[in-house]
Length: 420
Image (tube, rainbow, N blue to C red; front, side, top):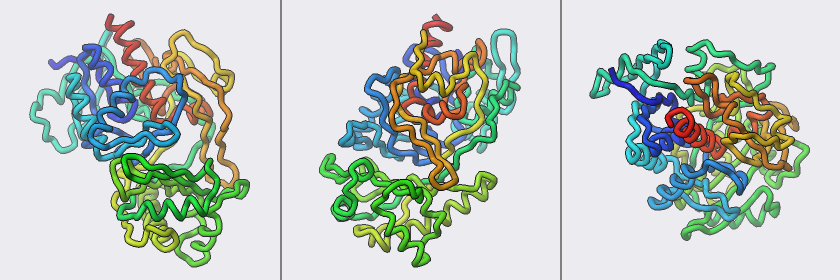
């Protein structure tokens, strides 16, 4: 029977950081990922760049290593605000493979756990490979592991094990479906944009490695003065986009390219839609938004859709009850803990389907997330957006750098306290 110190289910941001760090500490690790590549939201959902967090952040060795590896293959930049999280999603897939191999992490792509049998001091798991192309078929059955880390984002493993789930109080955030456009004359677009919008809290641009990098945003909220508002109003009046298409619009240049821009939109407002319906609606909106950009933005005349996310961008999902439930009050007060795994100052960021109802709490002191919010029980742990936190606290902790820190911090905790 194959055996591991730990199995990590989910090769997204938190799962990769946990697997790599555990491998560095010499633990025998199996990383199971349902897609054919690692990176989760950053690669599958095109959630780029990473948001900037506190300069005093902890457990960021994995983040720094990832940045350095990507930088060496022209897949990462440091933006003018000091944010090193501007990554290229395609190169990220390659670099993550390389990093896992360096620390001897075993990976199973296109796989899920089909069955879990809990023993006194271990788990016996059976794995299903979607395409049945794993060379070592014996690896797919009767695998024993001392512990499991649920990094699925939706608490899939914890649900299988009938763990207690936190009440969501009917609170939710809209999902989105991101995309990338290429063939853009970014220098021309930047010149026009920087002249058109003088608000440097919204629109910025800089030159990195001889390429123009930029960012801008617009929402349909009427309590904010957006420079792009008249252009969106014109697009709606002309029938190029719908009003719902304009509810949220944000874009960033893509590292390692000279002509591509990633869009943090469309935001899909109807939470009652099935996943299938959300994808269909999102892709239709993407086509309209691309036509809008080509018609109204200088530099987009020859642009085209070059990538659409494989998965929806999910901001909040099922959260698991752990030894400690982290709350908004903990976050706001900056409560200190004996074993923090995250230190951040990223604000509570809640997207709403309604105008003027989104929340971005811009002034935040540093706060800490304790490892106890990741411990379901002695041999079961959870990392990523399904951690033990209330709705508001999770809305601050869900960003990629914090998920990296959770994964790395948990691996260090396990190496020093469980596998010592």
